[in-house]
Image 1 (cartoon, rainbow, N blue to C red):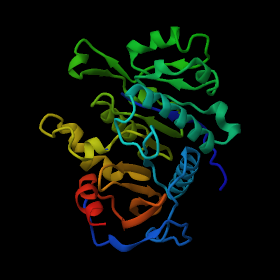
Image 2 (image 1 turned 135 degrees about the vertical axis):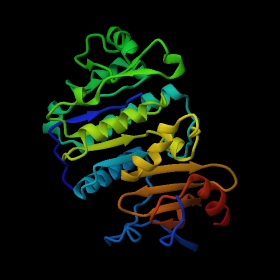
Image 3 (image 1 turned 45 degrees about the vertical axis):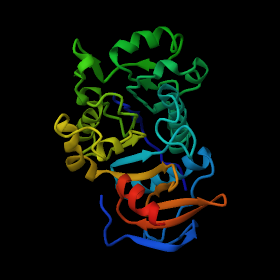
Image 4 (image 1 turned 90 degrees about the vertical axis):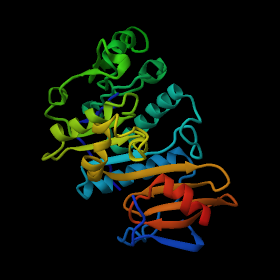
Length: 319
């Protein structure tokens, strides 16, 4: 599949339903293969063996979703190993590792002749941990947007002597310890030539996903642009991790924002006696896998995303 050419790419890391009639249990189980049908229930993608294969699958899924006019997309997978779960790795190290994976993903998605016009912007709390050897290899006009109080430190340390531009989307205030941040209006941060926004890790502060929604409304809706949320841990919001009573605006995203989103690539591992994997590669169905004799066996599939609770308490125990 040919690489998509985007005039410019912007990355804003600002700062995770029910079983239905479309579900099916395959009690005998079957191995993953690659289907040719356009029916998503027959479109099967093999579980990746490493991150190189994962990124190629995510890139192909993204290209197809964009071709199918999907404007708001999600990519979610573990960064401490394909079989890891959130918390297995130290937070800062996971975020730094994810930055490298995002860079590789951009290399695959954006054609080489367009990289000099690629603008990657990020609000990334652990950006100061990026080794200088990595920052030197990034695109010459890459932009990162950490919080305002990190910009100067990053400029003098990690990015000293680098041509990377630094900026911010949220600005800490006197009440930052209570979660209050001074927002920069999204419309003022977007350039006319921007075409694709990559939002990485928008979960460090609970208000950051609200900024992402604002970006979508002001810069993507009724345009030809696309927005991809990369490893945003949206399941925290989907599962009610943040009580709606204390975070009503965040909870409202599950009704106003998330339904517009297409999850183009997703891996979530479940450990323990009834361990397994929830896996999806667009346009295929959601699949629950179990690893047997070094092979991933599909034990359940359905069109709509099941809740993590449903997979852990109902699907995997009965597989």
